[in-house]
Length: 179
Image (tube, rainbow, N blue to C red; front, side, top):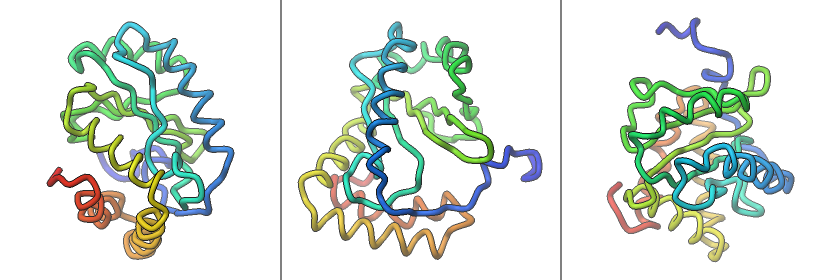
């Protein structure tokens, strides 16, 4: 797929903004809908993860939600109910992360939310929750992460993969893995 064939939201530059308290409300509203819409596949409640889940932490203005599923192989059946709610599947071949099924909820030319369907027993589930929880209880870690995010956004604002890679060693240190 050529870059001009991608939707605008898929190639928008990375922007890290001041924390918005409205992110928690949006996440709660979306999670409630997803808990109902994805009930046949879930192994627990949808969780608000990522930087928007940490009060005071600057973030990309995109709410990240992670849903625990029993079996990832069953989740293609969720495509239709999610599509009806405005979620767009990122094809697994493009996502290149076989441990999840990934959806984006766009609003016009921007991303509003991400949904990660991940098996609860997968290491990535534990890492994401561990990282979020560590930042929630340790303001110094959150401040350090904020500085890393801001620098990465400036250096790699046009390259999402490089932006993510620039944060990975910090995340690995916090969760104590080599994910």
